[in-house]
Image (cartoon, rainbow, N blue to C red; front, side, top):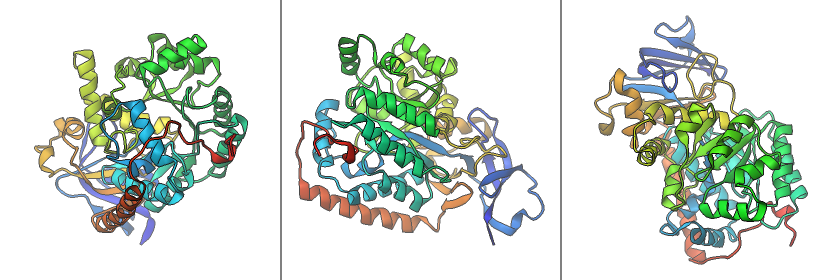
Amino acid sequence: MNAETLLLKGCRFVLLCAGCKPLVDTSILVSNGVIEYVGDNPPSGSKTGYVIECGEHSVAMPCMYNAHTHAAMSVLRGYYSDAELHDWLQAMWFVEHRLSSREAFLGSLVSGIEMLFSGTCGFMDMYFFPDEAAEAARRLGLRARVGPVIMGDVDPYRAVEEARRYARKLLGDPLVGGAINVHSIYAAPLEAIREGHRAAVELGVPFHIHVSETRREVYEAKKRYGVFPVELLGKLGALSENTVLVHAGWIASWELGLVKEKGASLVHCPASNMKLATAGHFPLYEAMESGINVALGTDGPASNDSLNMFSEMKIAVLLQRHSYWDTRVKARHVLRAATTGSAGAMMLPRGAGTLQPGAPGDIVVVNGVTPSALPLRRDNLEQVLVYSCEKCTPDYVAINGRLVLSPEKKPQLLEEAARAAKQLNEFIERIGPGKEPEPPCSPRIACRGD
């Protein structure tokens, strides 16, 4: 068997991209990690590799990518859920001051399995212990963009040099790449933002930062610097095609123009924003219509508390319609954000988020007989995927042409998640509840007090 060749044969429906007209009774051939053929008559010799009969009720769709999360925070799922952001953060910091690399790996593993089981093929992570997130991603075959988070009382130049070193060592890795993660304008030195962005451009990796998440952040930026947060990033020279701005619920219209001018990406995390009561309004429609790349993320499993991108798509549409008082945001908008939008923000290979020939072999095959997804037809396919698929679990997931989820693999992955969760529970029970007034400093090597 040629492990580099994968044939998905006779899929009932194939969705090539968000907004594309679905194909019927179609096969997909992946060779050397790339989609080689999509059609009803696979090339001669394609059946010599790994062949999967998709099934009568199957839907093959592009992978979704989670453009913003903190994967290891599954250790904190439900730990302190019913509080507003700044109160909630102090409970998170209590645990994070006590977190070790072991809990970070186990938390990332649980989150990675959850993502696979909901059709997500990659994630952009901002958290401590990036090696552990990378190891979990590699073990599961997921794509990831990782790097140390820069926050707290750090020497900005030393912190950025550590982030640069980390990203550089991942260059050339087919699945796990680097990201320069600076927490925010209020939790990291401004010099780290300026230098971090410079490093991201130099290495060709994302510059990943929270921005304009709360009204308080906007007011404090205006009071301290005389400008709004995105304007401040512009003045620091930290806006470009590498820049990934997460949350942006309090972004001003003129800042949106600046984002468009510089080619930066925006990431919408609707469930987390509502759960933490950060309010504001993410201008999804205006951003997309103006040509800005819009991505979708779940945020971490402590603030959502789900990493299910099917659910996130539905929540995104509902929140947008609730905010706009109309239905201008459609299923195709959020499906595009979850696929090609997130792939663009993560700087994944060309074509990621589609099933077009030449695109990476990242494919999700969903069983359409899930009761909540019935009846399923060619004309309602996108709507069902966005509005009715929270409980859809893929039968198969291929990433870079490699089959990483199948009916045979599921029991083993579930066992692995359960074992990891048991150890995470023991950790939480051992440390108990508490709060810390200040966040951990990161990366540790650059902390001034150390």
